[in-house]
Image 1 (cartoon, one colour):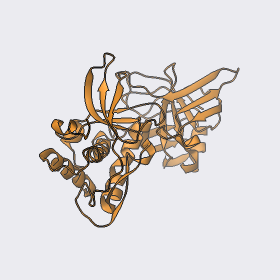
Image 2 (cartoon, helix red, strand yellow; image 1 turned 90 degrees about the vertical axis):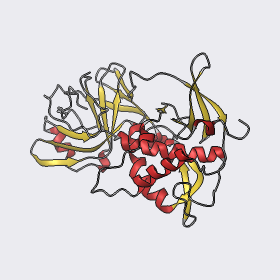
Image 3 (spheres, one colour; image 1 turned 180 degrees about the vertical axis):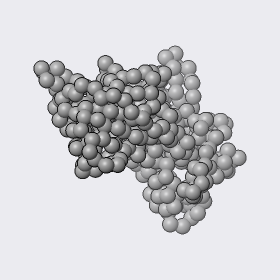
Image 4 (cartoon, rainbow, N blue to C red; image 1 turned 30 degrees about the horizontal axis):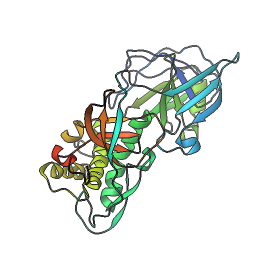
Length: 333
């Protein structure tokens, strides 16, 4: 374990105690971890501290649906004190309740709801499996695999509080070395911790950590990408709720945005979607509960409706992506 101050948008430097796969970082309010594509600089090393993992919870540990791979970690420190790392909470977030209006069933529309092709249909998870979803409809192989692989990983990283493209440098090890997926966690006292998968990291990582000076470069999940994944789930959830593939102007624009992301060429800027950018996307910090897809209304403490949309496994809420009048047309609504 090793603590270090977070500098305003620069790389992490830390001294190392014993390799545990968890790096402790002291909180600095100047750090903006929500900027997509942000790269780091350098900060001075801090005094090292050590600890031993006592317990871990998360879908990567016990298979719990809807949780991050590592949801919480409890550590024992020298002297017997305990330190617990948990999910990072947005200080601007507000607690809301989702009132379920209707629960659609699996439906095969006979053609892909996204591009309309009737050939090579495959089973589609709504939402994606690592957010607690299951097979709810059929999409063509191209929309399922290519579109899913391009946007759903970013949504998973946002949901899990993960940072990507992480590279470390330090000590006598030349160059920057890639590491496995890194999760950002915090303590109630405001210390940040980086949870690293050592099994998928460069073999020189331990030498870098032991050097006493470590520099980290990374990027945060890209909102224009993960919001398109949220739009994909919301659109498919809307089709299931309506019992048909809607033929409306807004539905056509949604399909066009999803197909543009599917067919994106890496030599060009990733296509943005104004529809996806305007969605309310909310996540929970609890395990999956309730139906995989449900038409839902967000309500405040006085049961006044704040927004309508789709609840996915009780872990993700995305506002209704189509015309408002279609929201109220759910059978038996």
